[in-house]
Length: 101
Image 1 (cartoon, rainbow, N blue to C red):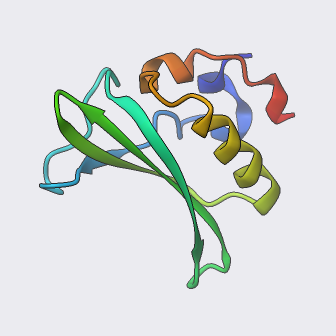
Image 2: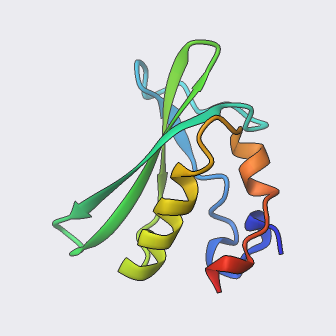
């Protein structure tokens, strides 16, 4: 099963995003931006872990945010994403996601 078809992420991959420099400039489609890093952070208001990914296309950086999931999912997905650094968001969406369960 491809990541883009994984039930736990259906409709959430690719995650929406915007330019670091200009929040009104949306992340590129068809997702040719390259993953630089996945970042986990604690959401105080919802008391769960969130995931943000930093990407780049033609020297411009973008932030894409994934909706909060449970701690185990976020931990596994965070590790997976950081192993995919240098791949486009489109390529990552086409990867096998059976490891997610």
